[in-house]
Each structure stands twice: as structure tokens, then as C-alpha cells.
Image 1: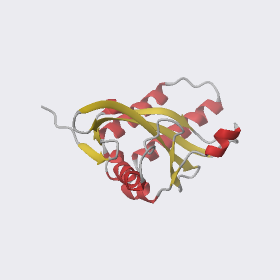
Image 2: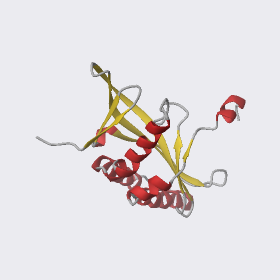
Image 3: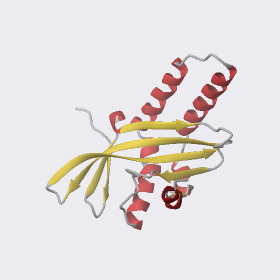
Length: 171
């Protein structure tokens, strides 16, 4: 029998149960700096079980983003506009979620394996131009930097909510 590392966060909705499994970690999007957007950004999906009132449970997947500037000296966690890992949580639950990301998530085998698999995928991609080569190098450097994240990096990172004004204005 294989014992999984798991963590639990108690929320108003119920108990969120997170287990260290590569199938629970998804890299949904990844962006490298461009002229219009000078930041590295990756969107992770994390699968977990929500146990409601100790009677029923369902599997869920919610998302968050890790954003870094071009020299990797500044890290920001960002909520997604939908299915946010931080959504519908009070301040204590949001703190617990951030703590989960720093003390547990970035240290899990699932996190490490999902990034390693993505690196291998990028390495297998065909490149045709110098621009493709530069994009590939930037992507791999960013992914390798994600493998080096520490608890302190996450704990010191601010959590930004989506800019609701931009959504409402359609900007």
C-alpha cells in the first residue's frame, strides 16, 4: 500500500482534503514575458475532495496563478476569475490556503512531477526560428525556477484578486 501525503483545511463549506498525487496537479496555462505582458505566469489546478458536514463529498478542482517578474525576483500569487482556490473563503481560510501552498504544495511530489513532465514536453517541441528557441529557453528557465520555490517565497508573496473593474468594463 502506498501512503499519500495529505493536508486538510477546514472551511465554512466543509473540509478540503488535498492529497499529494500528480493526477491532482494540472498546469493549465503558462506564459513567458512579451512586450505586452512582461511577466512569467503559470496557472495551476489543484484537485481535492470537499467533505461536507461529514456526510457527503465531491471532487473539485480549483485554480491559482504564480506570477514572477522577468528576473524572478518578485513573486505574486493571483486568484483566477473563475474556480479560484481562494474564492468563497473568509480571511482565515485564505491564510490557511496560502499556508498550504507554501508549506505543502510546492514540496509535494505531485507538484515536482507535473513541472518535470511539462519541462520534458517543452523540450520535445520542435523549434523552427530563433524566436521559438528563445521562447523554449525562457519557458524551461521559468519551470526550473518553479521547482526551486520555497515556503518563504510563497509566504512573502502577496495574493492578488482579479480586477473586477476590468471584467465589468470589458477591458
